Image (tube, rainbow, N blue to C red; front, side, top):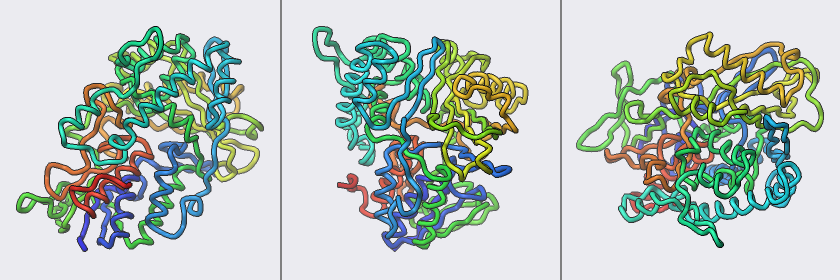
Length: 486
């Protein structure tokens, strides 16, 4: 069996490490920071606990498979996992409000008809049905198989899999998500609902392919899940699984480059000049030289006095009053002086608050990357955080009077912790767009070097990171002929 060096202790890297160790390889993970998990971090203060990365888990089957394949304890035996219901509540500037039940197509239709108007639910449902066709057509080649080098197969993924609308007005598939909304939803609130799923992943609905409709489809079909104590618990459980499989971790080990010998990867070189030999190298580090700066996340952690009211939604999306100003601020050259779409997360979990007389709330918004906006400028950061709190008042009346303290995380912080260019958070891979929404393949150009994590196939998102780990492990264990799990 081979010695394998893994660069980074993010979720995709640890997923690959655990699978490779089970296959009998000697695996060492080298992490420049002092802990595991990458962007799946934790911030704790005064008895309040917050996730610094993703807050909810989608497609839990990816991690169920990982835990089944790497040990005796299942995912549910390793972490507390519960479905969030309602999946989300939505508030709009015109006063429209609705809550969407978790994994209930009929319930979603009913909620939209009641809040938006008769027929709104059916229009949304028809769009989701077409998104399912796109999912069925691309799920395996886009997510469960290594990215093919075959020109014909790559060309197929470069075409948008979202099907043309049937009936009297049948045309070719719309080029963008915004075009889908304009033609098929015909309501600004439904448009905001659709586009909020793309925006949460840093995708511009004006340029994202129509296949991005799979994002609400996945959430609506497979549900949203909460890990007890916060999603950092999943990273902790995966780290424990790696250690149990005898994966070694070296923290504070900054890898400066990959050692090349006879045309293949032969180890890693550290910042201090020392070298560790390896037969294979797996890198979860973003390539700062080639990875574009994706939009990032601006996060505000709020320690509140007063108990959490019964019956409030775990997740509430407060939609921006001006779609145009927000999109210009996130994706164009406009500055950050706009009111953003704010996601308010209020877990009903005693583990994240000091006592029943307090509440821990997280506010998140998708923003421009660090560099286009100077997220190290204290005045810019304070002003944007204030606008987020003002928006969140719609979901949490009297919020300002309840704040004990607040802590802010910006894309500048993300860049410092993870090394992601501009603190960007990569989106999942999508079909269409001429291939612009695909990621570099897991097998790198240098023999013996493999890419894993959000900046490699199949892209960003917690579930996709787990998929990339499975693909890399398969390629190393079974060789270049590996075509994914059957």
